[in-house]
Amino acid sequence: MASLLAGAPMQTRLTLLLLIATSACGAPESAGPELIMTGGRIYVTPAGDQVVSALAIQGDMITALGDDATVRALATDDTQEMPLNGAAVLAGMHDAWVDLFALGALEDRVDLRLTASPRDVQAKVRAALRNRAGTIVGWGWDERRWPDPTLPTASALDEVTTEQAVVLYRRSGRVAWLNSAALERAGLEAAGTSNGMVSGAHLEAAEDALLDLGSMEAQEWVRRSLRAAAAGGVTSLGTTPLDPRQISVLEGLAEADITVRVGVRIRADAQLSKELGLLRLDGLGLELDGPISLGLSGLNEPLIDAVTTHPPDAAALAVACAAATQAGLPLDVQARGDAAIELALTCAATRLVIGADLLPTSVDVPRDARFAVVPGRLANDMYWLDTVLGSARAPRTHAYREMARHGWLAGVASDAPAAEIRPMEALRIMFTRRDREGFPLDGWQAQERLAVGDSLSAMMAAGPLSPTLEPGRAADLVVWSEDPFVGEAELRGAQAMLVLVNGRVVYSRPLATPPMDRRQ
Image (cartoon, rainbow, N blue to C red):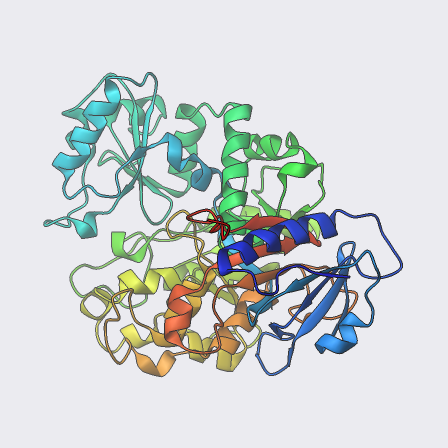
């Protein structure tokens, strides 16, 4: 048994940690464990109430947990030992809603995140026209960051080009801003979208007509997204609803490309015929409405500055519900406003309402309702919710503690790429209810703070594995740079250092500088 890291500098220990784990987890099976981790704070349950210092892994399974001496006694001459030096280890986390294709495509799209006005967007599009043929696709604009937060229109993009189609995705939510050429080619001019803002079925129609997804390019998008998930410390995720073209791309991947567990949600018109390694059919999915801030969510109580009567697509839910029921699959619905949430819960096949940051007012939430929340939105929403929804209604938003108390909180999502896949940042927001700058000091609607253990429970329980580390469980776990149970500062700085899925290393944080050579 080799203990290789004792006395080495920190960066050297991190380098050797990866080498040891990689060689151990790829070794032939032996009578004893291939890898043991010792000297850590290994949280057996997400509640943080059971902690051991060591565990053993053989093949893709955890075979033992306990103190260092007990686990070391199981080792053979072929076992590698990884001293954790006090590092925290948790079961892998689950991200309930990730757009694999959009997240991976960001590198290939016009970056609009730093635009401060429609004029800035126009300049970015004008520059892209000089070296890009076909449809111009951008991502990241957000009118709330502009001096005049009015939604832009197709005419603003027509000032730049009326020849090439332009599709610009908003940073959060499945919403895109199109010029007239894009609307015409997608057949949407007569569909009530002449202002250029499209979402839901209209956005899907625009994508079908305007975006040529070459399989090799789209496959690379998926690979990038899975690397980003692993780097964030996520070992399993659920996809947005995938259409037939996207399913075809997934089915063309090699098994080695699927590095984290992927629960595939399909649209009612799609079918997954090939499960591949860590990729499995999880159910049907439907995006039922759009962001509240854009007036695309029907509310029981109107916005203070404008009445919103935007109804969810009841016909689309009926189709998805019937398809899920016939296939014997659950239906997961992305819903934000009262009307969409209430409508989603009328389908008996509904398993999870995702993005339910707003609890409805006109009806009692069913006792068996299951919601997945998107904490990353709170850091932005807190600046306008009181003004737009009113002080009486705002406390019903991002109500994590109330959801947990009633047993409704059943998942946590990043909604990537709208937000980064950073589960520890999500935990920090749920625990403190502050933005990244620490505002407000006492936390926005502080009564809805949720303890770290409860947040972890919600994040892990929605995944495909038991949230408890125990012998016989697949070895999906993460070594973190900081202990999330210590305090807010640790949550803010925590990074995934090593990620294992099925006992195989899928991510190790790279070093900023090479290890020091002490011979000099």
